[in-house]
Each structure stands twice: as C-alpha cells, then as structure tokens.
Length: 640
Image (cartoon, rainbow, N blue to C red; front, side, top):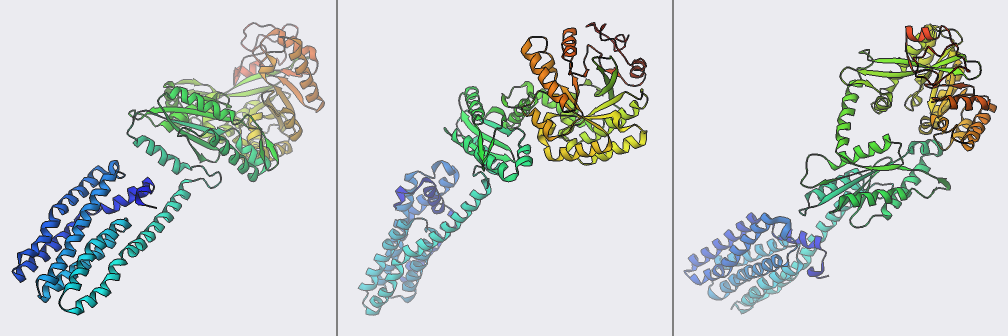
C-alpha cells in the first residue's frame, strides 16, 4: 500500500514522526557544515563548501517547516504539501552528503578528508534510518541520493581497493529500506498493542459498547470540536433491574443488558454514541443543530426499544426504562451536560419512571433544594425535627377504630414542613433511611402503649429497610423495651419495595411474622404483578390504593373489579383496608360490598398529632357509620 493510500491516522502519525525534534536535526546540520569547513581548510580547496551551499537553503526551509508543523499541530497533520516539501528537502540534503564523498574521492588524497567524508555519510545514513523510518519511500530515496554519488566516487578513485570497498558498502545502503521497515513494524506493533489495550480499557466487556471512561473521552472530544452546535446527552436507567437479578440470577440479568445495548445501538446513527456507564445505566451522546427535536427523537426511540419482550436465556422479560436528556452548547460552560441529563432522569423517576424528561432550568432549583434537604437530613433525627402524626383506620360495619397509621413529618428549621414524599427518597439515597425507620418504630410503639389495648399502630417500611436483616432485631428490641404486644404492631410495605428486593423481603417478612408482628401490603392495585405478590408472600392485611377507591362510585365496572379483588383477598385470609376514602358515596359503596373490612381517609379523620390529641381521639374509639358525613373535620367530631 502506498503512503498516499494509507489511512488518515497513519498518515498523520508518519508526518508527526518526520517533523518531530527539530533540535536533533539542527545538531546534525551543524556537524555536517563543520565537516565541510574542515575539509576545505585541510585541503585549501573551497570547492568542498559546495555541498554546504547546496543543502543550506533547503536545510533552513526544512527546519522552518518543522517548527511550523509543531506550532500548527493537528490542523496540518494530513496535508500532502507538508509531506512533499519534507521529502524534497531531505533528498537534497542526502545528495549533498553523497556529493561530499564524491569530491573527497576525486579532488584529494588527504586521508583525513576522505575518512571524514565517508564517516559523515555513514553516520547520516544511520540517522536517516533511525529518524525517517516512518516513510519507506523517503528512506529509499535518501539512500539512493546519498549512495549513488558515493559509489561513483569509490569506483572512479585511482586506487582499485576503493572500488572493492564500494562493493561492501552498497548492500548497507540498499538495506536501509528494510532496516527502516523493521523499526517501523516494531513500533507499529507496539502502537497496535497499546491501541488494543486502550480499546479494551474504554469498552464494556459485557455489552461491547463504550464504558464510562470511553464515554467521557468521547464527550471531551465533542467539547473540543471547533464547530459550533449543541451536544446532547441522554441517560437511560433500567427500571427495577435489581429485581431481575434477584429473581432470575445474574446470568439472565447480564443477557438482558446485552440485548438492551444491542437495541440501543440499533438507533445509533448520525454520530450517536452508546455507552454503559454503570450496572443498569446507559448513555447516548449526539450532536445536533436542532437539539430539542433531536432529544425528543432519541428519547422516543429509546423507549420504543423496550416495547417488545426480551428473550434472555429462554426467560421472556418485560421491562421499562427511565430516560433523561439534556443539551449544552459548547459555549455554555455553566453546567455539565451529564449533570443536567441526570437531573432530568431524576425527574422521570420521581414522576413514576417508564418515560422521559428533558432538562429545564427550573430543575436546577429543585436540585439545589434537594441538596439542602439531603445535607440537613442527617441531623433531623438528633435535632428533634421529625414527628409522627396518626391517621385512624376504622371498621366499616361496627365503627370501631382498629388501628392508626403513623405518618412521618419533617419540620425543617428554614424551609418549613417537608412532605415525606420529598424527603423519604432522599433518605433512601443517602442510606440513612434505617435511622428514620428505627426512630419511627420506637416513637410509634412508645405512643401505642398509651392507647386502648385493642387498637394497634402501623409503621411503613421502605425498600432500603427490606435490604437490612437487622430491621427484625430493631422491631424485637423496641417491642421488648416498651412491652407492646407484637400483634398490635403492623409493618407496611409497598409493591415497589417488593419488586426491588424479593429474596430479602421474604426473609424479613418471615422474621417479622415469627415475632407475631402483622404485615400489610400497601398501595395494592398500582403495580402489574399484584396477585403474584399475594401468592409469593404471606400478608395479614391488604390496603387498596386510593386510585381504585376514587373510581368505585363512578360506575359498575370499577365497583365489580374492586369487589372481586377484595373478595379474592379476603378468601386468602387478609384483612382488607380501603385507603383514600374522602366521600360519603365511596364509603357507602365500600360498605355495601361486604368484603371490605376497614377504611382510612379524610372522610373518617385527618392525620392527628401524637400525644394528647390522638389519645383524646381514641378515648371513644368508635364512629357511627350511619352518621358519617363529608364535612371537613378535626378527627374528633365524627364519633357518636
């Protein structure tokens, strides 16, 4: 393959090698000019300065071009004119050294001058091989330009032994090309090995796409590009991926990741780059002059990748993804595009997953608020900023208050009351939720011992709590310390928590039930595998989600569906509780079904402060089902 047809990268590397270290070229030129001068002085023949005059202008021009190449750098590393000019100048310089030997053979018998010319020529030839190995054609041309005058001088010398000497030197000049090729092949082999190592270092070994290091290298390249425009980052997080690993094993989880990577690569066009940043997080990098349209297009296609089932080692899986996208113009350094995309991804997760959001400026304000809350969360327990309120749960038929659900509130010193929907996910992500749960269990149990003996209390568990076996020990220690009967305590968890930690959840549920503590499944009806949970896990109570209750009075289909869910659950021995009951019509509909045991909601009572308020409320723990009304109440007036 000729040099002109070599790949651009190889061309650039060859030019870089030829134009590197101009100082060494200066040292060689100084030596050559000194040799020409010494020959002229020792022979008093100024014709020995002719080689210097021949190569002088070309030497200066070549040095100038070398310095210009170093200054302009990558902008000129593939330009053909730089290659041609260096080639021509180098051949003229080599010819001047061969001419010096020819003069020494024909113009003088001075031993020093002859030895000086031959030694300089041989040294120059060695330098040519060592320096210009990147260009085989240049080494060959210089060898010929230098070797032919030398051979002519040796053969024309009156002493025939010089002609014999020429026979031994000719193979040396002819072997210059192969010597240069050997050096080049050795260095190229090392370069290829390093390139292979680099490719391995920036590639994900499982999926074959770029890894985090490779992605950030590509991002840096995009930021360094001279043309204007927007570069786009899209982050993709697999929803509940850990549940796949826990349920089917890591081999199935790995197969799922491989298929997801392939599907994401199938939309890879127009310069898109796909990478796997972490276990179940992928990223896509693109550039566009219409970033909004491009982000919408990419996000839509990413979600389409999850429409069909994944066949993972014979296991067919359906999963979803949360996506966040952002675009930052090169000239806009105020924020990282990855940070912005991550904020958009967080927004998607916060809004229920299985969708996408594109970064908006107001997300930055929400992010700063979250960081303040995350920072202050760690001292919320010790600073006494947390409190529990209690929402009663009443029997729909007898009117008896059977239990109260404890609900956590945070009174921030500067931001005011913070909703648990806001700070509980932050506590989970900061891995301090166990401190909150421990405080909630202890506070709820300490309050419950002051209530009537037939009224219990409910405490919520998060997905993080279910990953810790010590939650069972915590509950046991609190029950012993306060002397509360275990059956009066109910530990409640959501379907989402079950989906994240199925194996550990079984162990935790088993441990709690072994203590005599009741368990409840919250928000039933919001997921897609409800009855599977009822089969796989043993619960004592089932709480129908408010989204189902809102529709019970709107038509017979919703009513039939809820009746069927409640009846089936009741046949499994579960106590059925309806959440979010706010209207009299809902209460009447639930009561008429006969299969719903209890209700919870504002129609019965708002959440009530602990201490004196809840204890006063429970002094007459009954309400009259026939007289219940939709008036806004304080949690006391509904009693008979």
